[in-house]
Length: 77
Image (cartoon, rainbow, N blue to C red; front, side, top):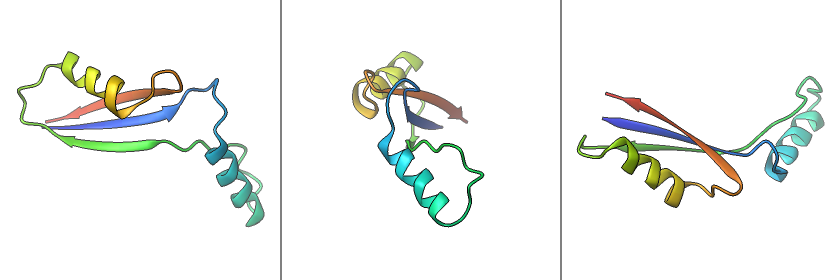
């Protein structure tokens, strides 16, 4: 079983990396990009013995900063 975890800055938090990416894209002449946000993608290979609560605990306590980031977990069998 695999868990794909997507961690992104909260919408209310300034994302300087996203601003830098957007500005670089504009510098290359593509002005259609209005905003960019930069996050993390983590793929976990699981043995299936963990609970969903344990997985959320890992994401909340180790993989993200809950003050500044939101996360999403996608499970694959």
